Length: 221
Picture 1 (tube, rainbow, N blue to C red):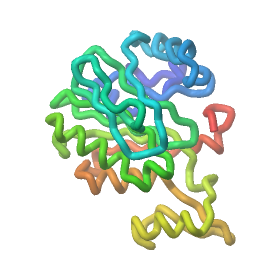
Picture 2 (picture 1 turned 45 degrees about the horizontal axis):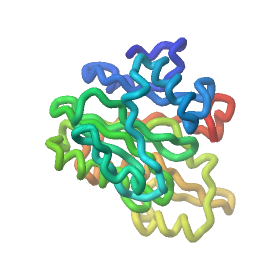
Picture 3 (picture 1 turned 135 degrees about the horizontal axis):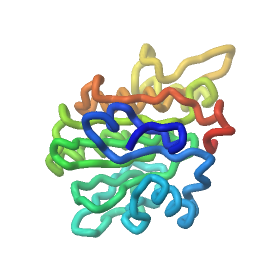
């Protein structure tokens, strides 16, 4: 689908190009996707069948559900869904948390992930890649789109949480930093690093640097 102003959806040029993957991140204008009726409207606007949606409960963890044979196993305890079954739309609901769309179009495996700070600390995108590989995807063929989320500019945390992420990623990684006596955390950067650690090529990651908190008129936060 083209990335046109009238559509309003946030899309990856990489996934919209040679991969021709129908995907997108909705914005405030579309309404609150936690409502089933609103979500159905969003899917219709995107040219998708509302009844084909497969989502998960989202508990801020690191489990990934698998959709196969029309069944979504683990939906109540997961923060992402992966499938190679056609005819379904996989998705997650986010505001400030990080939405990650994964696709290996060469092998027909796709996924959607919700990564909050707990899920990121638990390596939820790494788990999603692991599940994709188990379904036939390859690390070199997986492409990832990190959508709009709260940026480090606005996401302030206490020293304990900052230390947790510095211990995970190392003090030199641009994930947690201190500015004017306040600690900031970059969840998008953390997930990008984890995707690379999981085997996704850096060139295959499209990271939208767009802060939902800075743009409260455009996004939910």
